[in-house]
Image (tube, rainbow, N blue to C red):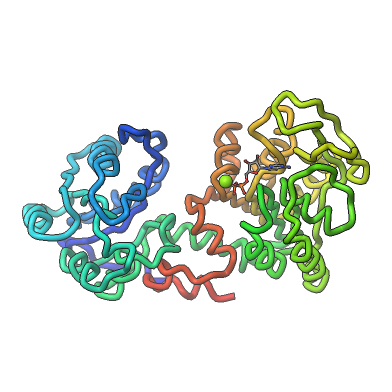
Length: 397
Ligand code: ADP
Ligand code: MG
């Protein structure tokens, strides 16, 4: 992977694809600026090197036409505040107005283009639209890891037309996520939970093949417990995936990967915050009750494996953590991951929320910003955004 540091960017027009797709309220106010802050190392570096920095991103789903709610003005304003320097916002992302703004730039200046998804050519990876983006710049930098799984013009097409390098965030994500799959720091332990086996079937398969211990929790554990012949009462599970769960159990055995399931669970008489609940051994779920969390014995057992790991990956809550009575399993695993001596990597929207709510972020080596892109990377899929930036070497294994 060629590094941004090896490229001479001084005075050059550098088009940077960033992920400024931040959550906003109905008025377009930014609710969480994490993604903007994650792009700062690359943007600051380019500014310091005297590049003319042209930042481009999508925001929301405007579906190929301008939508006021998804304009980049507030993002540009916030970026200016974070960088402590003026940021010019241009009201389009291609065409004469944009070219004019770029011509007026001095080395070290930065502009933010309008939402790239206001043009239908973006999501279609239209060659003509890609060409119009490419003609704005001399060099292309892709730092939008969160959009790397999209074969869109500003990610894929434009990279075939300009000299292209990954930005620092993209590079960091690839390096850290590769450690989970290809890393040599063993034992490697993955904890996967959350709502559905169906969301994460490919993830489970690829993990089983590449790690030493796979720990399962959350609603997805129910499907596995069912596959093992346990009575799980009224618990949420996926009938059609019981067979797949059995295949994963067999595959783990064939790969010599240990697969751990809950030994005790917290059950409730119905799905509610204040439902009657109790902890029972996994083979004693009462008829008509539902599993909403892993039990304390299970947390203890999982923690022992996490403590001994040298690489840990965690994605997906162990229970219905949104309800306090069913949050202990998730919180316990989150704390174990954060206090482990291992290289720790966490991904997934709900899992990140838990890490931040408990203030555990400093204990985690890498908090992946990717969402869908993170999962697809760990599934072993080829991501268009990495292919185009020549991150291929990192993917082999
Ligand atoms: P992430 O966003 O971290 O990838 P998911 O979106 O896959 O995680 O799953 C999170 C959801 O799974 C949460 O809303 C949580 O309530 C739900 N969940 C976890 N365990 C259970 C369970 N035992 N029964 C029902 N829902 C569960
Ligand atoms: Mg989620």
